[in-house]
Image (cartoon, rainbow, N blue to C red; front, top):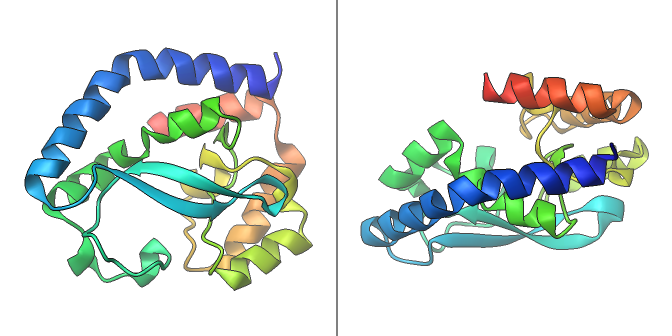
Length: 175
């Protein structure tokens, strides 16, 4: 089975039961803080093409456009802390997967302003991959605060990616 077909099938299967949850969480977000329930942000995609990532909003409106590790936790809403802890804020990205902008497994998409990470990934050929909802670096708890280490791990995934490896990473993510 091709990676793209796998992405489409699994994201469709996951969207059916999670769509009501996304809607319910969106209502709770709107009741708990001002602003839209769905957060849209430009990210760097495959071949460095920008795309708009979709997430449930976890931060206050007006939070600076920086990597999550660079933003004060005071910007995270009460509901947002819960959503992040449970990784539920990522559910709308299943739509990005269906549109072909993302994959279920791949390097997490970064912001265009994260120049060091963009350059490191470029030099290692990582942008030949679609960004993912989860990936090797995420299951190993490597975040964007160490751009070089993250880019190298993303390149390791590039070298070893395959259907079985993706299944293993999906299972590791769920666990």
